[in-house]
Image (cartoon, rainbow, N blue to C red; front, side, top):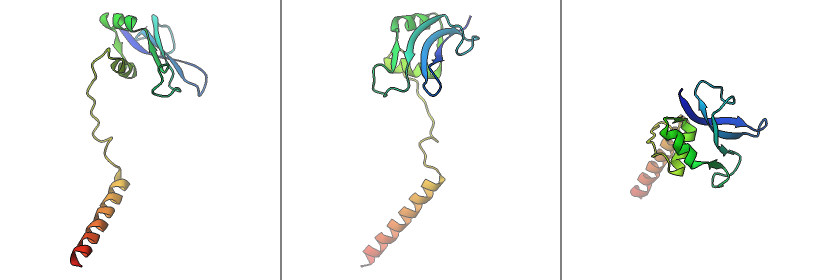
Length: 121
């Protein structure tokens, strides 16, 4: 049986609240799970200690048994120091869009013209 450590959604419409659970990978997202390992409340501020709560000992147990965390849960575990940080690379995300690049080029051209005018005086 392939076990995953993942999020199971709880809470009302427009008010998300998640349980961190160990579940069979074939079970539905909000369906049957083996054990509840913690909670995640995305509505709280990022620096709040109540935002992510986990039973670290049980999470480590499941990881030692071969459970694979999902991407989001892996980030929680990295922040808690349980997993080593994974190097992520998305070089396109940091690049400005077409319109921003065009504005930057126009600004650079105007600055170059202003620099030439000042040098001529």
